[in-house]
Length: 114
Image (tube, rainbow, N blue to C red):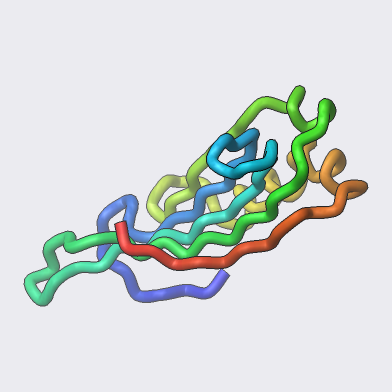
């Protein structure tokens, strides 16, 4: 993890781990993604927006992945759980074993302000 100076609010620095079937592509797709979220404040220190950098692997949806369902979980720097502990649970997630034998269709990286 790269440390950044961020505001003191609980959701100023966070990660989201998520996966599941998505329906906004022409072909049936299963997506697994990690999002890094950083809060942006104005010169007075007031919340202005969040910057989110997203990494997403997209797989053709098959019966195996269709049966997985979906999952999402956030980690925030002020949440009481260490990043290393949270990341370890993400690395041990059962979905990793299922995806290890599959070939992703796409790998996308993008940034947006929300």
